[in-house]
Length: 346
Image (cartoon, rainbow, N blue to C red; front, side, top):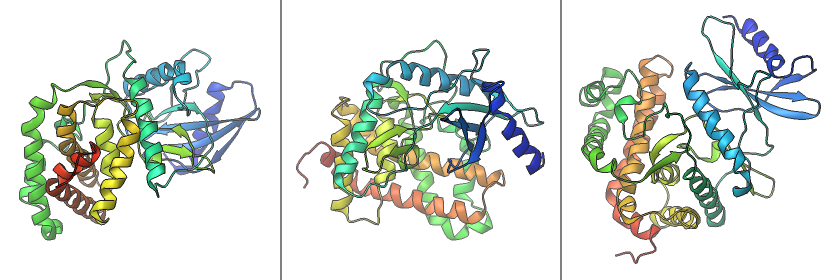
């Protein structure tokens, strides 16, 4: 489909939700994975999302069902979450009339900007926001099965990235990645360790998790107060503690001084634990699950490289980032857990 045709179809989408009404549609800042437009109707703004990562309507219906359930509990959250807008027929998804069958949905709009975590107080509020959402998600049950598997089912991350394909790439990298051979061997060692731990992970508490709460999926106002948590596209049933692992994975920057890094993580966890009581068994596997998040990102971008979506340089950066973070966790995991639990460090 030509670009002009694509934009023309996007411009016609609001008519599905607002038949007979006047609207305007504009381009604004959006996410990395999907096409985003902003629709204005009678003084109210909405977010139009065109799903680019898949064409699976069941995934979208599950996401929307959870968002509608969360909306019924909105008095339990001090910030907003996106609410899908119903079509006149009661549905929430429109399929574009094109050869690719792309899917679109309309959501409520919240103004704000993406946060940057620059001090412990902001990280405390970040943890509080995640804990509040986790507590509410733990109370929600719907009559649909999630389509996305838990993080630890790593064989399902990307269709091209089977365990054998990952092993082959890491153990015998193609020529453009010869310089990353040492890092890839180490990544595969961690991949193997994680695979061995899966039976024990299955026994830990599970619930609905957002699975991707970071600064790019949150909004704050001019004073830095969190106004919204966004992008529930990958919500699924997973390990409860995986929600924390995803957040801490972004906070672990091996380039930071160790004391500062641990303080940042401890500030986040202090906020989170005000709302969710994490058990000792969950805490002990937390470093492994932070590794899992990094391995998930590596496999995701390995798949994108295999699909021809990303160039070699993007995957090289991901390999280095994965190596650096998993190596740091192996060397400092005990200290990290102790700092989160406010125990005295050796």
